[in-house]
Each structure stands twice: as C-alpha cells, then as structure tokens.
Image 1 (cartoon, rainbow, N blue to C red):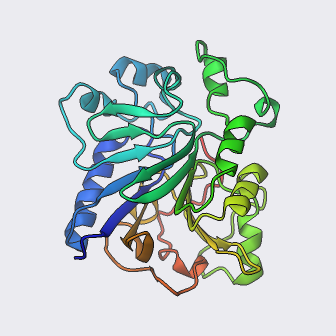
Image 2 (cartoon, helix red, strand yellow):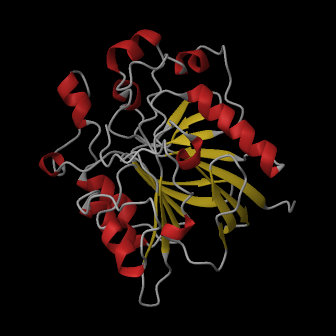
Length: 302
C-alpha cells in the first residue's frame, strides 16, 4: 500500500457498545488486509468513565458500562477513536474541555466545534443537535438533568466557528442536515425495500452549514438509520452525506473509506469489505447496502 494511504472507519451512535465496535473494526481490518488508521464516531458515544455514572445517566442503560474498563486501563482501544458529542453523553466530564481532550489511551473527544487535522485530513466537527430555544443562550455547566440535556444542543457561536472554515475534507455532525429525503427524491428512485425517511428529519442549521463550507464528505448519526445523498450543485464541489445507524448491526453502522492523500478512492459499508463506491461514481441511494429483514426503519434519535 502507498505510504500516504489511509483506511478510516466512521461509526454510528455507539451508545456504550465499545466492545462490539472494536470487534467490527477487527473484522474490517481482516477483510481489507490492513489496519484501520482511525475511527470517527458521530456522537451519542456515551463514554461514561465510571460504571455507576453509566447506570445513572446512560440513555441505553441495558448495555454494560463498557467504557469504564478503558478509563481504568483494564482495556485499551486498538486504534485511535475520535468522537463528537451527541445529545446523550457524559456532559459533566466533557464540559471543561470544549476544545477536546483524551479520555483514555486512543479515545479522544474532538470538542464542541472546530477543526482538527487528523492523519493529514482536515476534519471539521459540530457536536450536539439543534434546539431553537437554546440556540442563542450561553452554555451552562451541566449540574442537573436539565442543564445536562441543554449541553447536548449546539449554540450559534459554535456554528459560526465551523461556518468560517474552508477546504474541509470531512465534516462530523450528530444530527442530519434537513432536506436529505427531498434531495434524494429529486435525483433518484428509492431501491426496493427502502422507504424514504420523514421529510422533517434533520435540522436547517446543519444543512446551511454544509452548503456554506462544502465539505467533501459529511458523516452524521442520531436518527438510527443509514442514508446516502449528495448535496451541492452549480459548479461547487459536491458534499457526499453518509448517515449512519446506531451500533446495533455493522452493515449500516460502519462506513469505511480508503484514501490516497486527502482523496477518498473507494468506500463501503459494514465489515464485508465490499466496495460500494469508487471515485468518479455518483453517491446516493444506490450506494447504500442492501436492506435486511433486521434493518431498523426508525427515523428519530434517542
């Protein structure tokens, strides 16, 4: 492989399921015949550092408190995992590091909003979801259930910070940009077995953000289903949007990309290693994995 070649894996809402995500990445490395250089998670990671915190605060309490083992040094993540915040996180632990920090070896919180250069790639990010009532309000320290919930909403100043960026290879957001089903229906017919999600899914702020900074790729989660569409016309660089399912099944919760330099040359879903897209091909509904009987058709995040 070329020295500037990368294998990157995007992961949907983990909700504390770190062990299965590691197993999926192990399987992906096996079939692609190379290590995953870094994994990128799109929020609702729920990295509670204490098992008791997980039991009291995690959205998916039925899952074991797996991150505590990484925080205690009992386990170590095999490859770097970088994540943004969703609307379900350990906000007390994240609050004092809005620019990001490392929670455990190879586990890194990117921060609330900004840009990081990772393995030579310009990765922009915006944590949280849109809540119009709190958009202009200052962020409060999450000392109660109410203020912790508010910490899962992005603010205007954070959006403005990302909106000023240019030359972005990859944008990570938690909530979908608004209007993706309409955009898909304008250009293509959904394949058999794939109904379009609600037209109201996503938020307009993230949509404007994508249309302003024109990232090459966008990864998002929150709504617990896979989707694929391209935004951008009129001579501008297109933005290929990848929506990821929660970490229940790898087929739609994992999306991998192989790059040469800063350009994605091929990409695929899950852990089969099958290529779903190559450079120069259109990106859209036909790029999605074949639907399975166990596929979730839910359209709202938790």
